Length: 362
Ligand code: NAD
Ligand code: ZN
Image 1: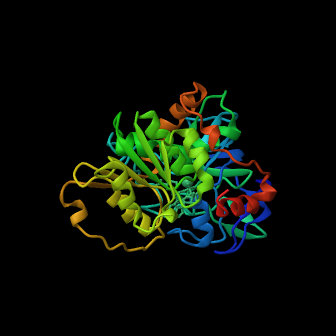
Image 2: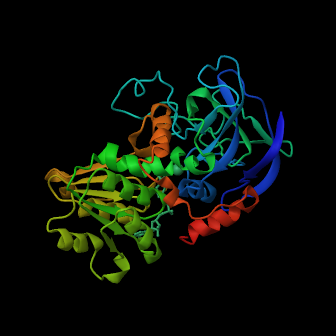
């Protein structure tokens, strides 16, 4: 058993509390990882607010981390102590119906199917003050040591800087993959990206890498525009500057609407606005943002009748165990610069300050 620090969420709506926790050794087919760095994603905030489905409190959040394997349970063959790894917020068991389908990145071991709040044997590896603490998405990266099933971790290049590549655990691949894998943005096309957080800015990078000629960045926080432009946005639009709906503004800017639109916020209103912003015939809208579980969205089916496509994406369509190591290699080869997404670096003791910065749009 290892004693270390972790940021524990005791109840929804409360700040995190940095506590000493006990982390049990990995059981068969499990891996214990020393987390070196973790990023914060809005999904962690959804969890803290109690908006995330299938989660029990107390829980250790975090799902965008990087670290080093500390020990492995019986039967683990793909990683060994000392290996650099990225824990996977979407597992790849390699055996289920979806893992066997090359066109899918879904896995029936994911939280959409079954809760990942306990290890597959339905027990937790964390305790704090004598109480069982739950895992988040199996990987709980807000702990200095964490345990996960082998199929929820990927070995990466030993040269990777862990404080930088932790972003490749969720935010960057989600946005970048939404553009290149899910939408399959074509060269010369026009794109609109709603929401310029870590995910939306990564969509901008993906659209640019795919050769889009016009990338319209949409956010109500104009402080996000400088970074969006640096990453490839050609136009920046603040819906607050207009009285008419943003989809009408985009239609006027582009003639008939954009070829591809992306919603990277997670609100029902912006989801419909993004859908209506892509053109009525060949337009593709990708839902990236996560709307509160249980939300129902009324929409006019005529939006889809003429051929417009509405799609979702989970972590940008990547089969994570296969793709994360390749993304890390791409990072090391400077094919993209995800470092530009890093705004602040804080010690774990200041994890709540990280969330304050996120909520303040900084
Ligand atoms: P973030 O909070 O950093 O960014 C959201 C941005 O949206 C902010 O810049 C904010 O100013 C902007 N915004 C808010 N309301 C707006 C409005 N009405 N119009 C225009 N802009 C508005 O969040 P993030 O970490 O980038 O995550 C974005 C979303 O993606 C979240 O919902 C998150 O849960 C989701 N997500 C989904 C996946 C997936 O696999 N599909 C993975 C990771 C994150
Ligand atoms: Zn995430």
